[in-house]
Image (cartoon, rainbow, N blue to C red; front, side):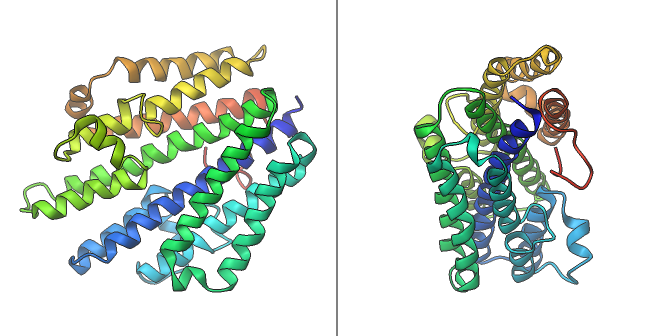
Length: 322
């Protein structure tokens, strides 16, 4: 496959996944903001939303204050923000358009319609009228795109590069979300948080990754930070755990391997082997923040190597981060 074709397919799925993950995080942040809390806690929660994507500095150049309205606008429809939902959907559509002949008509029409409908919904004010409904719609369209990909595409290199983009992006996003949320929880050490506040904090993280019911199925009783970390980092049975994502990345790299990708595949296998060998108490002893920071750095290197081995060279102004 031509590097240019693989590049467009890979980034089409990365941007689709990024739009979904951003919608998930914004939805939870918005719903949590409706609960009784101090102004300081509310502001910290919205600031964390920016920190997840490393966008705090860029946000500060455009807005004088971290408010729900400002963050929602910046993370949903600011076309200068490469991680905003609308920019991600646009980028996914443009990448798909460039190689529409490589995919099924069903997949192209799904991606294209998503972008057209997103513009219509934002133009009609759905984001302001019912933010949660808009975020649910973004999630649904991402699920639909993934379903059409799985249900209509030949199991060839086109299929594999689309899937590879999904799981690299998902692993990066999950690690960033957990890192920011566990750091936020650590700031409360020594405070006497009400049990209900702790429950909603950890339950919100689980719900943002569609893992609340999975948690109940595995652990059944109270929600604890240790078990949340175990489910979302180490449990391969949970489809949005880091272990599950890396398992998919390793399998896909093996399927698209070429003469120069051996070291990249080996690095992915090394990350996966470490995840499978770790116990949650080892991560907690090292520090969740320290572990996840190192993980994010390794995923960034892995992503750069994937681009070097299979795709077009990354440029500072092009397909951003990772």
